[in-house]
Image (cartoon, rainbow, N blue to C red; front, top):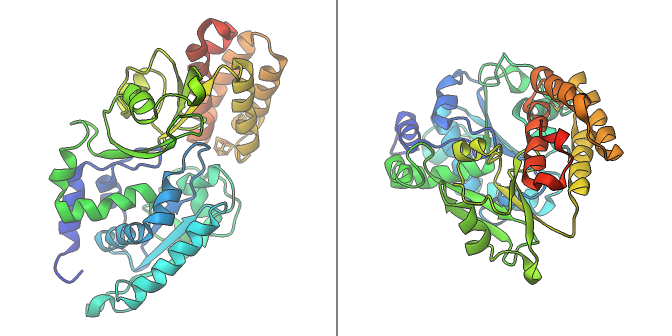
Length: 374
Ligand code: SF4
């Protein structure tokens, strides 16, 4: 704040090629360019980590709260925002308390407050808890919940960068994305861009589920093979269990078959296999869970977490659960339902459901009723 200017921070981030790590993958520099500079511009750190199987944000907030706050401060500085908000998942009370303590200390040290390091700049942050819903992690739903409403997605435009929290220009950044900023600004955007792949630079945190021999959060370069992550880092499955399918990127991300792990951890490569990187959660399923159970669980999750704001997803997720529970080939009912979900859902939650279900069907192959793959 005392030795550089906002443009310098923006240039580093543009050179880094950093994209949002929460799942949507939108370019950070582009989002910052789009935000309207105004007295009430606000940056929101999204720590409402909802993907079952992802706990990277939790780790960052509990173990590296100062890095998260430093990233938020840099984003505010670059976007000309005097206000920041941190939204912590309600099931993460330790992260909430840790971040609040870290913020108080950072204020005492002059990093935040009404006169940051004697520069006259104002930067004040509020750290609060989320409202316990999966969809509230989506940025328009998150803004609605911050305003005290139901955590439901809103139609866009207007985009939050133009009219977001209380109609103020708003930049929402995932906690992992923000936590990458201090490194990028201190080492240079070009240094960050040398990691990963030319089209998807940088690193990503991946969370390995409890079925792995070595579960945990790992930081890997984008482009690392999923095979290496599963077997090299994760050590395969515990107790010699055999991997049946791998869920990647959360319930709406996608599934890979056990013999289909020869793919790079990157959005484009995973998309070509019908999967998505999402927030980087890797959940291993062995043969103790049957394909029908995984399918039913996916639809139960969809029906429980659909926010209800649009009928294609509100009604469609329940219809999908009925079809899955019936245990038969869904035939034309599924083809019609998938089309409605993909074409008419208001947000990515509903639009992404058919791809996740088709990916699951492909991953299990002949053990699955063929109709779900269409
Ligand atoms: S698609 Fe689902 S989660 Fe998204 S707005 Fe519609 S009902 Fe809500």
